[in-house]
Image 1 (cartoon, rainbow, N blue to C red):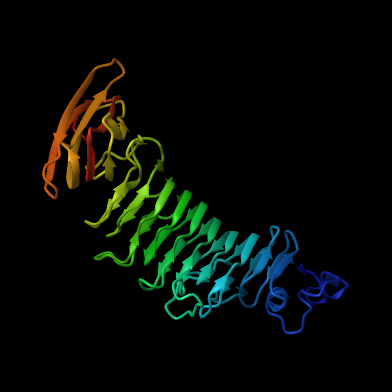
Image 2 (image 1 turned 45 degrees about the horizontal axis):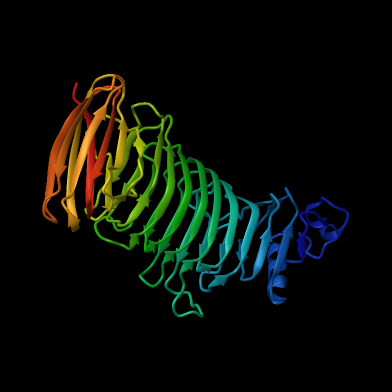
Length: 424
């Protein structure tokens, strides 16, 4: 254990240097309140726990750099500063860091515009649990091409880590994942929880060269007009930049009191699974777009055999859902379900593209049922692979439940686009 005092002669809060501890603000020449000196000491001894004063505030004049095999135990302590554009907490840009941990730490960005409060590069097999407040940008996970790793397969990848982030008052981007090439990627990480409130521009940005990450619950509350909950492949809008194969258990986006928001934006990204998407307000009008799919290779994927219910704005006939599914059941499998608002009449437009047919004769049914038990249905058969078929399946009365189901037995992979618009 390497305890670091927040009190001492240097800041006038204790009659004893460093509050009687070996590390703290009284270390001559320190710009990190003794924290970096404690990390270096732990590293020299093969690793250990650097313990901060629970609930204390450490004023920094230079960034804290994490090192391999060292645990930084915050206990609710806050790191504030430094005053310039440097991150508050970082890893060294030219080295691979392994098996380090951060627990119970608060990082205060000081409100410095366009500064990343936390910047972690080439981090592997580590566990990071922290909170970011009052920042220009939140956390950047970056795989640089220049870092040298001992493992020729892992290279400088940010991989095999577990991240839990809570963020509040972030003017720009909350969390950025960005690799630099097919061999320097952000991959195979687990994010059990991302909770971000009062985010100005983008909650989660999977910029480029990032794949196979697992997200549990991602919650984003946007505070700026035109904000985006999550965007995939923001760098390579016109081409594939290696953003694919991400799994989201749940994505929730709030956008109260702002205009022009987007819950989910996709640019040329593939094989991404969003099991649940929730937006607020729960009424008929989200202040913008739920899904903004700008690339023909993008895929909104729903797991076959599970039902989803969504609400979205009906002002414009924009695609509400795109799915790529494989069905192997002889029984109807509900892919998508919509609860129609009480007032008005709505038209459901269906579009499908058969990607691959293995067995059987694919067919999808759309149907609605209202409170009185009245129902109506329409079917659309899938044609030859690669051939797109579109149909206006049916008009639904207000208050009814619309469902789209695949009818077996068949085994096929297809894209499905469903659009709902008000017609009267």
